[in-house]
Length: 228
Image (tube, rainbow, N blue to C red):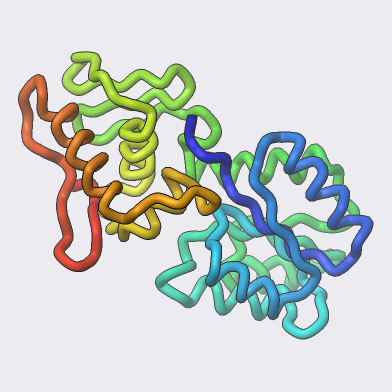
């Protein structure tokens, strides 16, 4: 299985934060949390999440400013941000979206709606985490059944090679460093030497080209690997 999607909850109201974290954890996500924008920026830098649930009004650093900083950085702009706010004016909604928020939820909200919004963003930024089928050229990966085919020929991949391929196929062309792949494929709590990444990428390449076809995995010298 792929490591669970990582959600960061940034909410200064303890009761609301607890409810959100409880429901996200119950759905199987890995959840980190904080109550202010400054700590949120540190957490994003240390352990980038897939989705951030971000309250607008917070101490130290507002959600809108945190959103602006995250979305203007090339290293973090890909992270999906769901903005939470009690502001109901259309101008506030427009401001939040123009700052870079991918979605905007007005308080009070139904928890079921927020969970649906999270799944919607994950389908966009990390489709394998919600069981979607991925395609790249003539390669198809079914995240739900764990089947991979190339030109309609079934491929045999080990679980690590499957996770590597799904990571590559979610963002074709994106360069993944070895450390980034370690976090995404093996998880932050597992110690694995970076050379292990090279070994498993080699196995993935062998599996992908066994029935013919060019090697779609590109080595980027000094940086890491990319698909295509």
